[in-house]
Image (cartoon, rainbow, N blue to C red; front, side, top):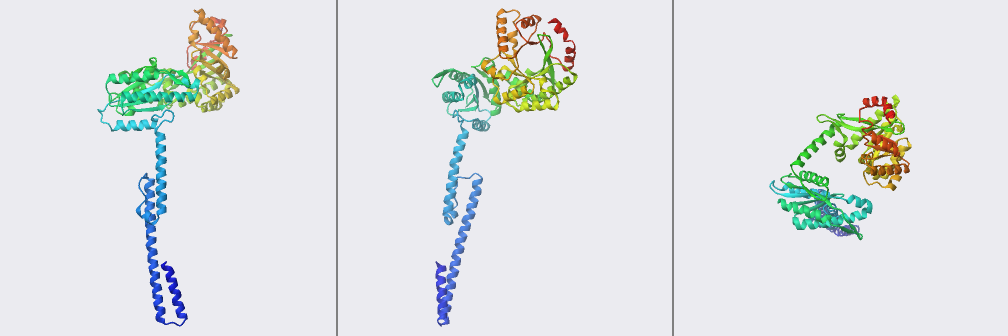
Length: 541
């Protein structure tokens, strides 16, 4: 506005001069113009100053927002000079706050059950326990459903999710009625749940809560018009007797839960001194295992398997042993399960694969007969890259895959994922043999067996044990041998301990045998000597 007036005044002064007006009139007009121009310039400078101040304040507010402050309003100077910018900033921050609250809420709740998620449960429980004085009591219940996997596998994941949601509802009722408002219920993963009850220390009260959990989860559930029964095994640990932190209490309650599983399931077990000693031993085992591969403490022994037709060596099963520095030679059963639980199975499995490949390469060069069987664990089946690493180990050793036999326990074979089945088929195509081990010890599905890429089936030792003395055992085993042959596979009996068993197994059509009646597991040198004298077995057969 002032700039417009100044322009008009300047034009008037110029016209006055042109018309021959007095110089004083022109001077007055020019002075007016100059004053108006200076006033406009001053107003503009003040306005620019307010804009700069508002912009700088807005920048500072954005810096605060990047640090997590989304609640404060836009600065007053920004509102004054740049009201549209201030409105946009506050709208943005309000939207971000709502989005973050929604995301946080979703992360805090397990989507299937609505219970506290694993991360939220841990955060809340750790905060509660870490901030509490040492004398503050609490009880932590670790709950594992007993037959959920069977339901999930047979009825489908949709049914399994509905069942988990109903389990959560029942646990909420137990928590609210038995533990009070401070109780925290969470789903850790799969079919594992936790319940933390602060301020509880009476043994009878703790026991009653555990019994309530077992009873309510043992009652049938109605899912899609079907009655489903599962049950639960529960372990409990107390603060401060069994630990002060969540980590300590979780370890204790988890150990107690496994005691419930081992004792027959559907029961409550409390942590005690005996379990404490087991945990100490387990921790020591974990530490020793972590360095066992690095220190080259593992070894292989081999148990021969011979043909009942001519006594020839068919396969030598590679069995893992641990040369423990203080405990001596340890069988695989003493440590492999723990290795799987702690994620150390991959390193151990790779060591076994490389060692088997090296042994087979030596035997191949010497012209030694038979294959070498390598046991494949559940974790290795789920990690299909293991089969790639196994193939690479044989390739590096320059030994053909027809000298390799892969053994999968019946339970592992029944749960083999499609990718693993494809890899097994590829190895078979390259010459390797595939064997299903421990057949008859689990829940085999004949239709599933027909779909497996396999060459041989090993009958479990429990089926073989009474075959020489019990007619019913002979009848059952003969029927199973017929089934194995009907599947196009060889039938192998394991756990054979007497010559009488061998005689019966030959009559009922078994193809090969393995066990103490043939040979005990032995190192590579002893196996070489055994092979040299193995014709004695053929003559005895």
